[in-house]
Amino acid sequence: CNFSQIFGIYTEKEKITDNLLSEITKNPPDMEAATEDSVLHKLWAVTDEQWIKNLSGIMQNKNIPIADGHHRYETALNYLRENSGGTKAPEGLKYVMMFFTNTESEGLTVLPTHRVIHGVSGLDLESFFKNLKNDFDIEKLPSANGQRNESAEQAIVSRMKSSDGHLFGLYSGNGNYSLLTYRPKKEGSVLDKIDVGVLHGRLLEPILGIGAKELAAQSNVSYTIDVAEAAARVDSGSSQLAFFLNSTPVEQMRDVAEAGLTMPQKSTYFYPKLISGMVINPLF
View 1 (tube, rainbow, N blue to C red):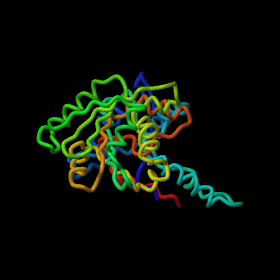
View 2 (view 1 turned 120 degrees about the vertical axis):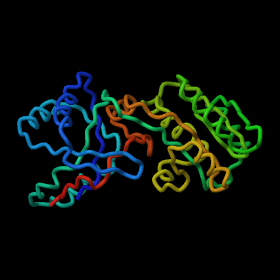
View 3 (view 1 turned 120 degrees about the horizontal axis):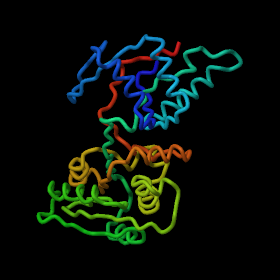
View 4 (view 1 turned 45 degrees about the vertical axis):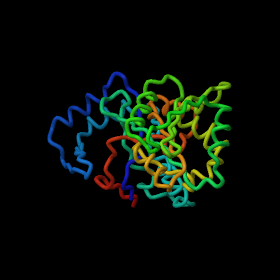
């Protein structure tokens, strides 16, 4: 069964699909459930064949970048291939459960996913900062009391949000914060235009030795949407560095997908999250 939807995005400035959906959602939902984070999930089942035909017609020629769940999509394709063989595949295997949202609709929130580094052997901060200077301008912001400071973290996040370039926050422990501004040397791929692509391609891999293999194994990087939690992990001694990022704009995710590329792991955190299990798609 599919228990969780693949999250697909599309762009429709006219919002014709939104208007169609509003015809349905003005009625009471068929099901609703509140999760522990106080988000209320509502479900409407549609059986009107003409309505479905109208919506399908509008969606037919749209590009649908996968914003979340590309592993689920790849698994669905592999499962279809493995079970096809020389005979006709079961009809259910030809479909996978997906959710679509219009990038022009209100309420689509993308939260940043911060990187917390641990287990990097032989990490020397002096050498690390020296290597950083090859591609980044560094502004150090030490905390007065030698410990992580919430107001300093909020100030860094505010600076990052107002920046037009690639600006990252860094917490290296003992109250030491830094702002890292990337200096582009030449025009790269579309991934060099997004913060998470710069962080992975210009810092994590070349300086810390955290490449695709390490990211896949999650041997050196953990993730959180909470800046304070990221810094607290460093102060606890369980981690070595915490990198703070801005959220990735939906338009940039679309550009990466349309270029035939894949976003770096854990690039986005959509909120609210769709609840798993509210809709289940049996494959047989």
